[in-house]
Image (tube, rainbow, N blue to C red; front, side, top):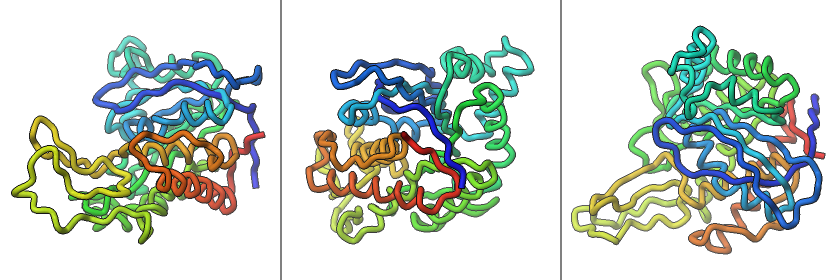
Length: 323
């Protein structure tokens, strides 16, 4: 078993949703409880799902007494292949705009801004169940990142399955998609673990944490089968108790449906998983929660995040170990 150690941590500022191209940045935030210990420097190569998962990470880190700096190279809906194609364009011609999609900067430019401790990569959710879509791009990105940041620990961020009432689920093979949320979780989990083993890197198990909640008879979301959509008027919505996904919402008097992205509860759970992984400590002592997540559900999400990370660390061959 390999244990990789890094400096201890503290806090930052984050953004929320990604639409199209999103500039990457780093922005430290002050903390009244922070000591002079070095901040953990975290860099995310991702898309809207990495944005979702880190939405509340600054607040959680601050309360836990940790300092954290976050850098981002994110494009909404971006796959590993797309990120790599931007790298190739920049390497072939540093002046090619295609190689600088992150607010006018290339991945090399962003990764050259000091030293990073952890750098995460992830597959776009719609392709997450097909391991072949990760190859060879995960390896290429890994090798590229390690060349630029040899001391950094590269980590896979395991994304989550869509809500059970989604109209679509991830690809699981060429020409084939998952039939339901369980199959999407199972196939994507297998794909992430296969690639993690190939690259010999750890996993941040957001997908497993989401599934623990979604598959729970008590805490999981259950579709509202009693709503009459033909007579539904704003601001009324179907019952979406314990949903971790955006689900139904009104947009200019039109009913919209997003079964993919995380709502505040899902973003909170994602942040709790990252907190548990990064700092190696339980988030159950923390009291911060989004306003629309009630106390009981928040407690369960904190408990689930820690339990999920502990299980992953117990079974995985490669670990990030916080001092």
